[in-house]
Image 1 (cartoon, rainbow, N blue to C red):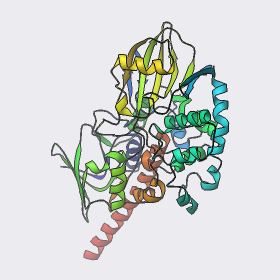
Image 2 (tube, rainbow, N blue to C red):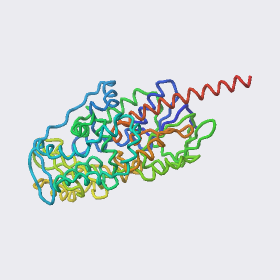
Image 3 (cartoon, helix red, strand yellow):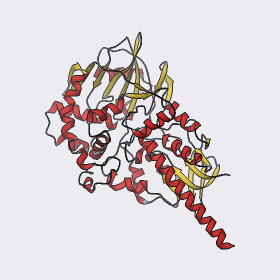
Length: 443
């Protein structure tokens, strides 16, 4: 059995950050990861002849935590391409224009949809500050859009836009989550959209994750699938499926919400935590990389919200090929290895392109994720967020799923990891003080 002051389970950005902070504060820290790699729901891998981000990717200067980490390690941001052409399909009709023109079509409807952003979230990093959010937390984004009374073509385009942002269906998606995203982008929907897909990390997400790990003295253990966590008066005991055991005084559980209930925790987590995990998140879609023949113009394309792929953009343009990044709301509708199926999906959005290769990762089928980026269902904010952020004995949760600010982004994961580490360090200090008082009393 290995022992330490603290165990961190999950080596995504939340777990890496927490482990670094605690280990650099002098606490013995063991970092357990089920996969054979670090970085969680980000994954830079060599596919289609280049390094591609199969999971989380984008960062922005409005995201203070990840931007500070990049500055800390001297890692620059790379600006994405400027798009010129746009395609969009509404009412079964395909339209073509400029990328700027497409943004103009989305501008008025988004301003209407997000008009109450600062009313409900005057303090964006304190999402529970305003009790009035309870009045709208059961409202789905689909309902909020339909209540605007937009012309049908604008309604369909706006719904497809938000289907992209949620990477899932809108009929259970929380309107409050859309408002929160806009709030942390200073109430500006175009700035919010820029933050979603404009800047990448020079060297990729793997470079930043490795920099955080290398700055830590935590002991990383890969391929450690945790089966159970038992906590008592003196500490926690972690047992893996292979029978390996680890003991510590405190524990941070930095895994996706959708897999939280896979671990047998005793005493059991509160009903609120278990219910939130059972429901999971609305981000259950697909991300697919597609290489097509020829040097294409830089374009973006929106399809119907129900399409297997409802968004495509030309990301990398080479001499004889172009690599597209595509998104759709249902992971089950996209085979990340099927070229012929991808050809059909692309034909529906942008006819005339010849698909050569495809690449991707099904995060919903991934047993250690079961979701893409965290996007909330209705009721999550008021019913579950505070409960998930509360410790249970010696255990604290961390992750982008429960961030106060940029939930669903790398930034939110780092924010949550820092907060969990701070609170865990305080608990460790108090725990040490109690042990000292007990020893003095015994003397």
